[in-house]
Image 1 (cartoon, one colour):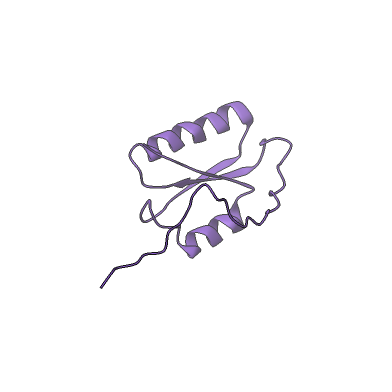
Image 2: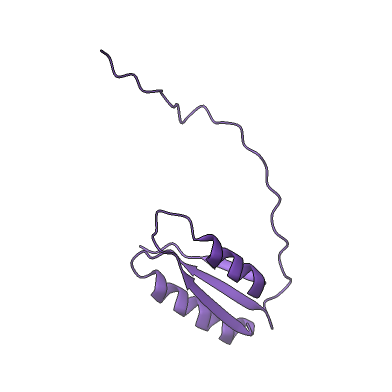
Length: 96
């Protein structure tokens, strides 16, 4: 009995739905920025450094950091919903 698995050709492309980009603010002064840690090594350090730079150089009013439970899974809905209520800009980390 042969074990047949479907073949996926990565060069073929696929149906892609174009999603509109979220509106970008003209500047970050006075904004609340959300930073999402993906739990990979050094992601927290990278985000803390970025958060400090955003406050010092760009006048960000507040930085809110959240951490996903596991890097290979999407962030929990409650984390995303909480950030969406509080921030005007969000950045997701990709640690090493």
